[in-house]
Length: 639
Image 1 (cartoon, rainbow, N blue to C red):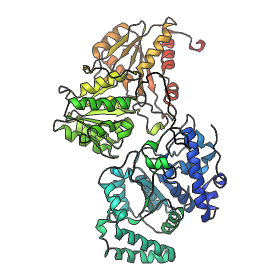
Image 2 (cartoon, rainbow, N blue to C red):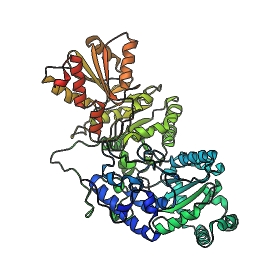
Image 3 (cartoon, rainbow, N blue to C red):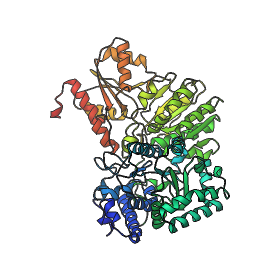
């Protein structure tokens, strides 16, 4: 389970300088060995798979042509950066990728000088690379190159278009490489997808492409630069400049070319190396290239987990007893169940129908579930517009991605008090994806907004009932339901729907001396902790609060009048979160209990398995039990 053996050429490459020592005729073999190394490693250790296989040739060509890290290479999202990491000194420890204490699954500035910009969310690369290019221009570093690699899926967001608009008038020396594979995690959607297909198959553009690359192959770079303007002027006689979106934004457009022909990509990058100003190279690739099953089912093989590389069989845990479902699947099945009874229900997701399980509704009711692409802001305001017409919209967005649409939540939903239901998937510490994906901040940033209900289920039954309550006619305000990634706790989860009165919690058990107040899934850790503590003659009370906003004030008065010590537990940041809300209540009502807040601390939590991270942050069952013992005056070191 340790280091994977690299091929004869790859084993000699510890930095891009080693790669540059090879003859270009050896680059295809390097690509083959790099692709095999990724397959070997991911099959055993897991991780993102198809995206990195699709850019093997591009990765090799970029590090072969450019002087990285002086020339700055920015990857978008970072799912595809495994080859980049392997070629830049991390091959021997790549088996630690996405493991607790190991390499990040994404480019990370603190990890390597070759990671020029930290990424994890999509669509940032053009803005970041342009910022670097503008800075280099200002500092007089005219020999420095800046390259942004962005997929066509990431181009569906608004941020790349803002960056393209600026790049076209910046005069900065930036190369944008559009990696066009017609995929995000799920298949791409929208008009841009159709546009890229048209431009790829256009006879006029293909003729222009061939003419340009023939010139590049025959003429010295300086001569090409002198003739480039004439070639571009001649293009106008074949295809109007306005018919090319990128040319219309003053970007020199090149391509499309075959992104799996490493020699062609290398030659093209060398030809573009000394062309000044903003430019865009369009390459066509296949996600999962080189592993047939990954090419055939690109969504499944985006991040398949461990698998048998020979047979392609994905390793799945086999249990003889019923297993609890994933929270996202409970959402997916429940929204279909509710929509069958309520014709006003619609579902919206920004590019995550599989991850959020809205795919179940898209399959069952394709006219009532919409994937808007990587466009969280649009997803929220689209939902708001639909809500003005009386529809009950469930807008399903990962907690960390909702951060990108915060203004729309306030301006377009909350101020107008529109009853959009925000289902925040992946709330809390998500695990292997790490700090860019942790849903740590949604409790504070949602509970501070007026007109907002903020709820979190402790189990699948509560998730179903909160969804049921949120779509009822008398629920007429924005309603947030946050839930974690992964399995719940109820194998028999299809329970009858019951309305939950907004702002009401429930008492799990009575106790003495200490009261544990939980919100969401960590309540199950408290249940486990209480069982252990009972054996030690410690008997804390436990309350599942269910709502952060509004709080169950009746229950809190009862707690404050009966307990002098309170522990709050949440899977969100303790800064401004659930615990803070409890303290605010106590202060406002002149109570003064001793309060200990357990949750995500005020620091960046790195990646690892959720159970490892919960233990690190001290709000797993063991951490809760320890907090109770400390309150009770038990010597914890002796336990």
